[in-house]
Image 1 (cartoon, helix red, strand yellow):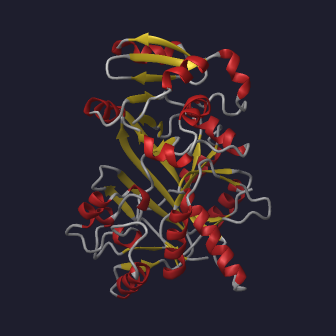
Image 2: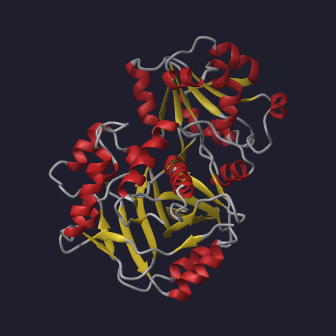
Image 3: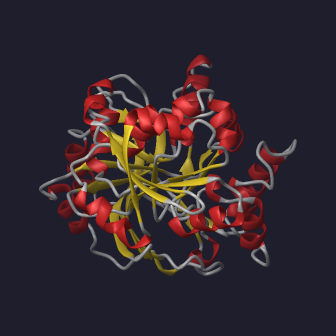
Length: 409
């Protein structure tokens, strides 16, 4: 169901630039202050190719990026591979006290709807960001950043096969400025590539990160199809198998700037129990089987909450085990029915301490802490064509940009 292809990648020339020093987070993670810090004193930072100081960028920015890529290729900053390859990428880090390691492949992924192809989104997208990535691709002629996809591999057969393809010295190895450890291997063996293509072809993939880039790549395909050109049918992708073990996916907690009406809706739909700060972990542990679990922090009070049992039938069966979906269905979307209103009222963070700080500083009136979840439940909901609320999942680490990129295909 998923079609992948090898490609002739462009990579930083390690004789001129240390690759791990010029890698950066995906464009949508880079805020203005972070952007200025990343590019400071680093003339070849990949951030300058994927992000301007503003979104949408100023007039002429896409052309400037195209010119810069061309100049860096001429100067030998970027080198193109001689043979089509599939890349094996591993990154390691620690986040929120958890050690995370992922190993997957970087390949071109077919992005069209035909031929039984199944690539499953799980979050909403917005036109302004899709148009931005579309213009960047059309103007430069390159796939600059990979999207991040996952698929279930419970017997780890595909994971083991991918790791069997690691037989050479990494073309990139080292720790980036963000503390993430990177290893990238190139594999151009035709038998390995063909066998991997066959294994992946039986899988449906879910987009973990990069929904806007994926939709933009499909817009690129539509654009060239109207021109009668066979271009834009693939998207650069980092593809990772997952099993039962943790793979670095976290809940995104909610801060509420307004709470008028909260108590009424909470009373109608949820069981709420007053707890103290020492009971936070035990509340989640002791209520594992309850649906819609969360902890509500106010200035001077803490409540452990879960959905009333008689309410469970009102939500889709594939969403009932996803606490964030239950929270929105029975509370957030009722409290703030307009999407643009939710955008103004909610603050989002995967880091609990930031939420507590916002509450202490008076930036929000209440903070909602969500428990960890199993990514397989997200996959099943997405496979059932169900979309989760905006900012439901936080995959960390992100796939760093600048590892390898390629021309549009």
